Structures are given as C-alpha cells and as structure tokens.
Image 1 (tube, each protein chain N blue to C red):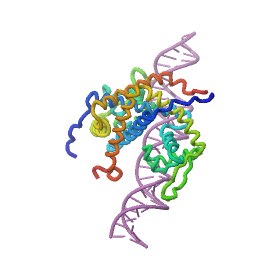
Image 2: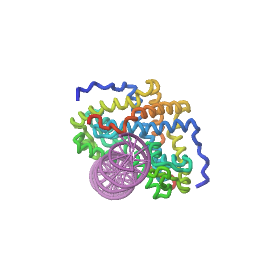
Image 3: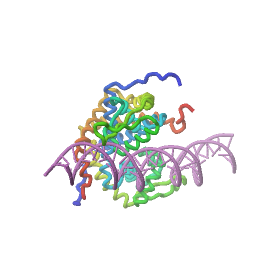
Image 4: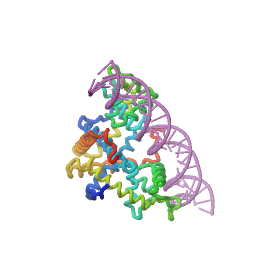
Amino acid sequence: MAQEPEPRWLTESEQDAWRSYLRASRALEVSLDRDLQSHGVGLSEYELLSMLSEAPGGRLRMSTLADLVIQSRSRVTHTASRLEKRGWVTRESCLEDRRGVELVLTPAGRQEVVAMAHVHVESVRRHLVDVMPPAQFAALGEAMALVRAAQDVTSVAEPADLAPGS
Amino acid sequence: MAQEPEPRWLTESEQDAWRSYLRASRALEVSLDRDLQSHGVGLSEYELLSMLSEAPGGRLRMSTLADLVIQSRSRVTHTASRLEKRGWVTRESCLEDRRGVELVLTPAGRQEVVAMAHVHVESVRRHLVDVMPPAQFAALGEAMALVRAAQDVTSVAEPADLAPGS
DNA sequence: GGAATATGGTTGAATCTTCAATGGTTAACC
DNA sequence: GGTTAACCATTGAAGATTCAACCATATTCC
C-alpha cells in the first residue's frame, strides 16, 4: 500500500547472465522435447517414466512421483492416465495406506523407456553436456544445486499462506 | 534400423549435474511464475511484455517477438490476443511489409509492466541471483550462453528436415 | 471413541499450448 | 509478367495443464 521502494535492479552483467539463462533454458527445453517426440513423449512425461524405471520394482506412489518431478499432483494424475492408456503403466492401490495409489511400470513401458533413454542421453549430450568442458558443466551443476536448495527453504512455509494481503 | 550402438551414457557426476539442473530449473520456473501471479501473468507472458517495453516505441513485430522469447508464432498470436483483451497491447499492421503485424504496448500496459518488473526483479534475486556469489552467477551465465549458442548451430538446418526416417 | 483436521488422489471445467490448415503478401525465378 | 515458392500471422480444433471442488482415508486431539 505504501510507496514502493525502488527495487534492487540487476546490474548489467547480472542482467546478461539472467538473460542467457532464460533464453538457453527455454531453447534447451524445446530441443530436448523435440528429440523425444520420436517416441511420442515430451520431456516431462519422460521424466516421469524415467523416475519409475529407477525405482525398486518400477513402482512409485503418485505423490512421491509428483514431488520428484516437480509437478502438481493433478498433472501427474492426468499424465498417468494417458500413459496408462498406452499400456506403459498401471495403477495399484497401496496396501499400507489405502488413500495411496502406486504407479507401476509395465514390461512394455520399461522397454519403451529404455529406447527413449538411448535417444535422450544423446540429446542431453549434444545440447548441454558436450557443449562445454566437463569442469564447466560440473560447475553449472553445483550452481543449480544451490538454486534448488534455496527453493526448498523459501517454500517450506508455502502451502498454507498463499495470500499475502488477505 | 540397424542394431543401435550403446549410447554414451552420462558418468555419475554428469548425471548429478544434469539432475540438479533439471530439478532446479523446474523449481525456479514455478517460483518465478508464482510470484508474478500477483499481477495475473505467468513468466512467459511477462517476458513478452518485457521485450515490448524495451523495444523502441514499445512496439515489435509478432515474429520478432516470437523469436526473442522462443515461443511459436501461434502461441504469441494467442497470448497477444489475451493481452489485447486486457488493454495492455494493441495490434497495428506494418506499413512496409503488409504481411506483418506489430504489437504495441499501451500506456496502461507499460504501467503494468513497470509494476510487474518490481516484483519480478526481487523474485529473480531471491530465487536465483542472490543464492550464490556474483562470480558464480556470472559463470552460470557464461555456461548457459554456450548452451544457447550450441542450439543455434544445431537448429540451423532444422525447419525443413523434421522427419528423420520418412 | 469421535469430531476436527490434514493428506492422497481424482475429477471436470476453464485456461493455455500445440498442431495442421488457411489467407494474404512478398520474393524468386524463368 | 506471371507462376511458384517462401513468409507472416491467424484460426479452430485437439491436446495438455491448471484450478477449485470433491471423496476417501489417516491423523490429531479432546
């Protein structure tokens, strides 16, 4: 309500770095998506299948999955339904917690993920990993790990208070 | 068609860095989006308005805009229509090239962008810039600039041959 | 034990994005 | 000059995502 104080604008070099990040991350996403289209999935669907394939028994609870891939529960529900139609996953209700549902990778699904992984890893190399020296890529990873860590602390007190002024 | 050669899988540390990137970039997008929701726009809409606000005369051709923000022309058309309904932009047909259309920021639109920018820059600082030392952030920017550059060369011969096997 | 609250997941509608097809304009070619 | 090919932007339908409301089960607290 009060007169807004002038924000701390980015310096020119911060601005440059931020723009580079924004544009590159967008372009990267487009490329990775496009390469996966050969298997009829986008990156976010692949991530989901990929997490499943790494989990013991190829099974994971919906909410765990949602947290892992950073997608809303609703989105995971819808995506799971689509993947189920294709015969790549099935749903099973949890034994311990009957509210829960586990998503299970089918044999056909596993076969597909493997095929996708081949395409995907080459894609990630070509568009990201191999475009810079290994040390630089490692540094990129470390910087992004900091970003991720910062997100956590910021949004711990989040699900409840989404209405700053009400 | 031939037996696929085993792909060059990522090493463990490459894998770690890639995962960090993927998760952090997703989480970051969510946070930046959420902070902008207070003004009823997402990051991609803001980007569009922002580009417009920086352009001389607050005007830019649709296709230029699409390239700048890395979105499909169709998406920009639809988004522009929504922004137009809100009174933040108007369309004007080009004088030189009558195929073209220019999107023009209205005074009301400019006022909004300024308000959004205040929120946005603080958001970018909190979630990204200020979570690491300046030198590290600069390095992040440089790495991403390489990614961006690599995209360009990769997709130069792209619009035509999108069907590898047909 | 039982009410109140929190959690897990789904649903359908609204919204946004993608995709393929289209109309209008300009450039290239012969 | 006129045909052909490219480009710009839009359109509408199909597909994906978000949002709010909902049901079922678990947990908390008295």
